[in-house]
Image (cartoon, rainbow over all chains, first blue to last red; front, side, top):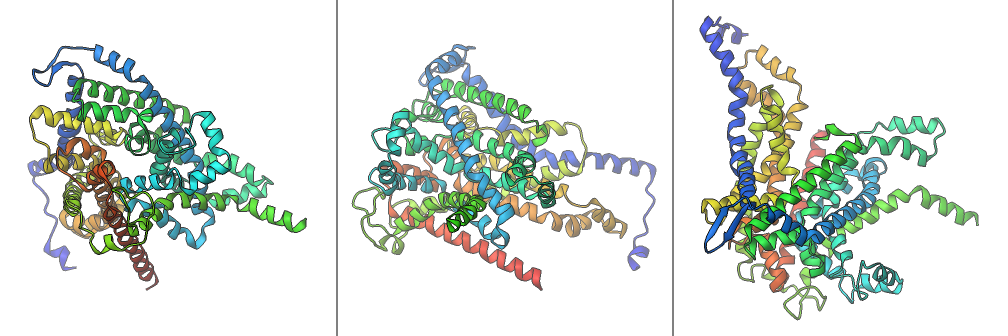
Length: 308
Length: 268
């Protein structure tokens, strides 16, 4: 009670009031200033630099100059379109596999796990704690030529079928598209499971009971109630999987051969080995534009524009 | 026949459980392999085939040149980039969650874009900036790169928490004559804390494990993921698996301890 008498709210003078209101209006800008400045300098400005680099010609010895050389884009596309198509195909396959594999696990944790829910959640996140490069290298052991997985697949004649489909080659898995897609699926699976789980967990379980009371069979309940309500998670999960998978070059490098190089591998080697900066910059821009276009169409189609 | 059909029905009812557990096995399998192979004694330079049991690597985890140096560098970079990203990101999150101002939507997309872009694009563009500015690659360029990509994740985590906060709590504090600073320190910050901690933990993990952005901006500096990448070409020492296993064990223990503590606190 003494507080009230100690600090009587002093009626501010007119000018002071005006100033304090104006100062309050400035608060958000002061909060934003350091972080936004940082992003402008280290995120936006680099993109501008990259745009200008993609239009330069020259060599390392003589230096690069902006010559508005748009042909770099055309050349890059004609030379590397197989890698572009391959990246999109691999990433799309891995995303579909992540959805098929991740959905049951997210569903299990959300609805069927009971008191095991926390433990299962920990087990989904736990692999993250070991560096993902080490875990990706472990797939070299798992899929190795004489290993149990390859021998099992071989004796079940699965490899004969996949060889015929061109997904594997010469009865081995390593250094084939299958190995790269497997690595991509494995690496990005948690990014699918977590948003799926979040959206499934929000579903009111009484909706399931209501559907059951109205004589819907379990499959119908899933198709008409559960799956539509989990759509935000499906959209978020597929984006979180597809975008990084398209630009990835680690799985193709560690688990694939030169025939599985993705667009990320090309950008990396153009930038860090060949030192052809204009081509690397042009390729990054094409990749960025392609992904933004695909993502925009996808979000429009799936009808959840408020996802951002 | 009836026993068989009962079993079939039981299987069908638990199909989702079986499928889910299979996926979990797929997720955990590489960690099991990493752990088992930390006890291997390989014949050649590569640790991909099982030879025989040995604890050599466990008794001498820093036995290969540069490995532990790269590990401590990664920890230092993760620590500093977490601090940087958490401070900058929390300020932005408060501005976005609490105030209406002009350019709100453009600020929103400036935060969102770094997360919606493949890492290579960001990595290559930042490296282009450093090259153009004539800045030499090393500790500082890695740190700058890591703060830049961790920032958006901190903003997202903190903003979600602050948005879900009841603004009447702060009004109540001010009605009780708390100064704005007191209100912030005693009410706002404690409630926002879980979001800030989540953002900080996320950026520590992201920074520590980052490869692509570091690959472009490190020059000849070797972080732990860079070391593993190089080892995949030159030969993988067993010590890599030892460190991977140890990190996994420590992290799982921390999580379990945290859950136990939380449960006990809830009970008391």
